[in-house]
Image 1 (cartoon, rainbow, N blue to C red):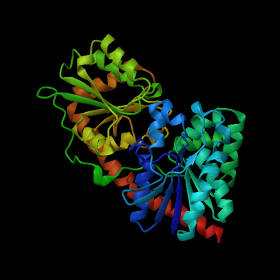
Image 2: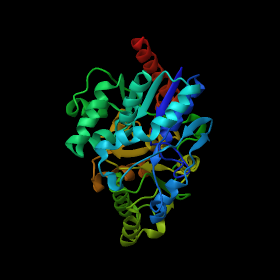
Image 3: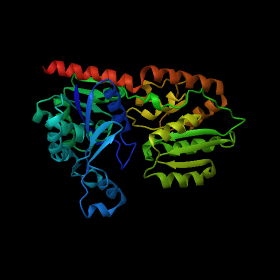
Image 4: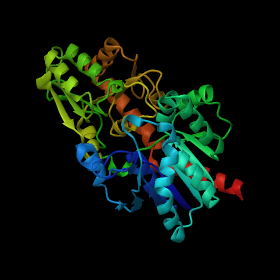
Length: 399
């Protein structure tokens, strides 16, 4: 079976962890005998755009092709605009930017199906390519289409509905996303929920949760883009409420983003700057290593589509803290496989942290149950098996 994957979210020399979940799925599929080729379109950066800012300069340096851990990946350019201006036409522009290279790939790789990750722009481009090459296409919704794109304007919503109507199957990464889609987009019966996974071979720690408030620094960890909805500021405030009770508590923040300077200033205002370390962007391997060393993983984020970082931390045997009413409730059960707190509620967050810190035996049990749950249900191998069944169903129906 030959599959063409289209995803603007994919590791590149610009960002080696962006879309890592798409890459991990591609590797798992390939390990099960599926032949994969990937198109990851990137913004076109002609002169003088490529010298205006470091961001656009880095885009221009992305190679046109790279073998990414055994997965052939092409990075064709397409026209984009700052701040997602005219985003409703982004799918059409992506299609025009990638159709030439797709035609060349098809000469030696006659793909049976196109799998797009996100409906706009990737799914829209896939929809047009599927017609050109007379093959079916499916789309995986990771969250942005429903949380952001659908609410931009009516033209974006119309573009999304067009993709959803023509896709042979729509994969959603959580049950909560399916509920949102059903209530707001009026999906048909061509949907299926397949949660993301973790790369089991990269989970370094098999040790049990080892919290010891008397003999070592206790590490609180978060991994995310530093944007408002991730709730890193809430972690900082909750941390400050516990600093006197747990003087050996440290907070490591992995990630970068527009809120970084504000968060650094907040940590100074709270008097915890010396106990907080901003580690910046790390490679995926380095992220997993930090998770294996940490004691508690806390990310009180809202509008999470799935939250791969939670299951990665859980696979390392760490008790995680997240928000109620989010997609993580598919795998985080309060008090059993993690802790759930009220969104944007610092007191609730501090109570959850305090509970884990003051009850190391309970925390150890939560971490162990979380690890078992993830390894049995949320690996990329399991994800690949379910995805292949979708491919087979779509191709059988297309015959």
